[in-house]
View (cartoon, rainbow over the protein chains, first blue to last red):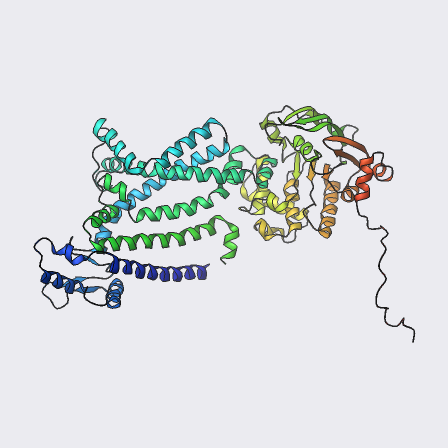
Length: 332
Length: 277
């Protein structure tokens, strides 16, 4: 088991290096000159060259790549020897000259908001999605099933910026049941905290719960047709243990896979939701950075998202071993 | 043994919205006796057994009578049937691998059957599971109890299924093609085990198979079914020595027997030493 984990972690490091490399290529070759956007209105070609020097953009590709990569581990200094020397400490994911901040610190500042959104939404969508899926599967073909699946279809089809705007308009503007979302710490004002996050949670959960309900339903219907379900009935078990213990558990494996990926994606920022509700998370930061071509920020958030997905992959596989004894065997 | 049959099926008819699958089938099993239900696939033999267990799909309509220890089973509620199932009547299925849940240890699954009817702690349930596994001659039962179905061989899995069926000491065991998925040597062991179990517990058995060779080893009486109807019924002896029905004769003729005379080809090489020199 330990050697399996080590193997996976080693694989993760290699994957991450590859991701960094390719992301760097994309930003190196395919994006507009960052020096120009930093330079602003009163810009002369001389200043641009100066900024490019300071950012190290005049160096060849591999020198720049090496500077970036080593910066992650040991930190780096921008514009060494000049008056405007800036030190970016390890782990340095770059420096945003627009925000005048270390990208890594910027992410760390905004990540709690993003994590709160992701965790709350995930809890909500797992509970509602899996429950709806189970009910649909057990009551297959009834109005329960049709109703739940209609709702799921709507949830998948409605774009979440639309749902977000409608919710905000209804609950905040019209009915005034909720105040305008504003980021507060949970310990500062739990009520306000809850009122702020309930809308983004609902918006995200609605979309994801729909997918999870459909996935759970399909898997559960498959499982219900298994021979061991007949055995469970033949043993004289009650309906609840038959459905949950024998029916649901085997149906959850694909749900776990999906959950790992979706949750990881959200950690890279719930771009639309954060932006609509004006919550200052990683996603909104990236959204703003795209508008102003603040490349270090975009790249930093991209790497964060990749990192989250890679880690989630490992976590999902380890969860499998806990869920499925046959997998446990093969990882020994 | 009393004269009263333990299981009496009278004019059982099972119909689905699209078709009738069992038509007026009757048979009875005396206390501790075995009835072999024989027929090709689609003959309605499995449906008959599921009807006894109360496990037919909801859309199935049944008429006739099924009485078990003098109690009428047809028309009982789900809850009433649930109390009987696994406790007083238990079923062994054809394919032990798919009939066991891959996610739980065999011990848990056997204990589950026990605890559903007798209650008790997990630990007590597991103790029962070990005992049951001992009875079906699984070696190292106290260790094997924590293993998962995929860690057992086919024959061992079927022993687990039998242990699960036995754990509440049922009065009736329904074995639905219990040896079909197993290879021949293992088949013989399982049949022997079932016979032993039946002898030691005095349970009645409904043994379902398409294989006359198998049924001849376990059953006192045999019912031959085809297209949902009874074709012939009698003691094993009668059926095998004096089959009265054409279909039964065909079935018998289709069964390979060990004492069949087969023309062996002449050996190509003469054995060493017998050559003329």
